[in-house]
Figure (cartoon, rainbow, N blue to C red):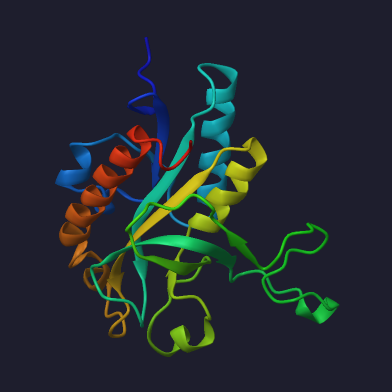
Length: 213
């Protein structure tokens, strides 16, 4: 029998999603097995939607989806972990047609989508999702506090299946311009441990009934 991709936290069933194996360190491996979506909004959306559809057809949808991994930021503390309170899609720009930048035409959604389920005591920040790696002066063009490549896409898939999402990100880079892959991976071991602590807090608050009721 195939093992479930869902992790049980008490009476709640949680689906953990990550983009890349490099972010899945020793501490997180002790706590759950994620679905690896791949990098970028297209891969994030496809993998999330396919996973949720498969669960809906078999064992049932999870109570919660948690997307976690790294993010870049030029203004937040490096290596610290933040939960996203709003998500934006920086790739979408239909302003030539009169739409606000970030608004998908004819979708009737605002440019920034709120994440209502928040872990008590964990700092929160706004998050911008897009297909480009952000570095150096590019941060000055982005209003949000931190950047990643999957969370907005994951949220849209979760909305389609009416499953709540929590997005956790450790700040891996952004204080200085990137100089190659090592600029991203250098502190992932520290972020792994801090994300693991956040997952433990999530577990405690789920069991206490403070997140989903």
